[in-house]
Length: 465
Ligand code: ARG
View 1 (cartoon, protein in one colour):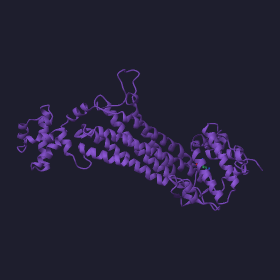
View 2 (view 1 turned 180 degrees about the horizontal axis):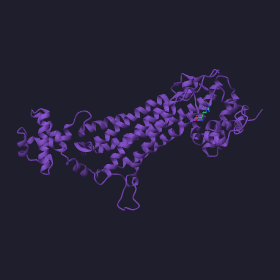
View 3 (view 1 turned 135 degrees about the vertical axis):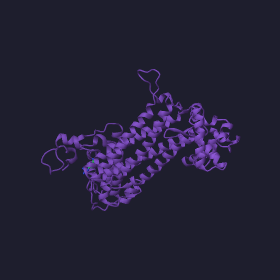
């Protein structure tokens, strides 16, 4: 019989079914509307499988040739936008397989030997995600490079460092920006590590139990550049933790972007006035002509919510599922796709936007001069003069109070006033009390001293080269 069973799916899965699937169920269960984006992975996986079937003499040389020819045609049609996706063929896998059989006949029907959609879909998602991870890693590297460039530019630009959003101690803007480089470097490590577990071959698990055909799984893994084969067929078709851990890593990256966004929004406000972002990343208001709004960082902060939401969705998707494959797993795709899209677009726009970030050093300095930012430095000075740190802390509190009560900054007190508080204070105190003195003293590894910032910049440049 030359009937193509897949062409007729609306009428029945097979001879077993007495009536066609209801239209509502068809729409409810179909995934082709969204999983067609897996098409390239699906073809790549099928070709690797077919090549192995041929090598194992499970299909003939002419079948293998037909499959390659048919898949080349399908690829061209999809790329040209003339492939006809059919809802009644449910998903990307059945759509491509049915079209292959239309194009090449019997060879198309032999492709699925030793394979199930259960291991096929697991492979497709893994292959697709592996490619996306590589793109994200490249973007994360670009983002770090932009931040490192800015950190170098502002290596000695003083600003207030905050705790509890209260002025705490002076830091450099370069140092502050490098904090984010550390975060994005860890995000990179996490993604690269996740990639190793994504990059394993589930094919060969078939529906759930493995297959009686003598498949060469290692060969398929090699063809696809995978790091190994999944060692338990039940796990291979039902595991989605590679997607969940990806989603967790993506959530953390978005959370880091969100924290940065929050700072950019604050820093751009009139009350801070620390930075400018290029106009092309801002929007105006339809009613208030003076407004320039940081929409991009605000939106990135907002989009973090949906990425974290997808993580909750994916992890909940798995929690009650018995082994092995369940249709629930079809629900992994939309959250995963949206996570990738959101993170990718956000990284891209941040690379460009941050390249245009401009600091306003005068405002940064003025802000650092408010709030007695060098109070700790005075206490450390007293320790060097022999005081115990707790006593020095107390002494400085008196000095801050004296300054505040007279509407001045700590660093503006006269030597006589300071000496009245502690006689050990001499005129060498004004170095430590100055912003530059405070910065320069923090030369410990990881500290904010400009020379340390430049050393970190150099380290990052080597790492990112
Ligand atoms: N569209 C399905 C998914 O995304 C493919 C696997 C279907 N397998 C099955 N036995 N119904 O998970």
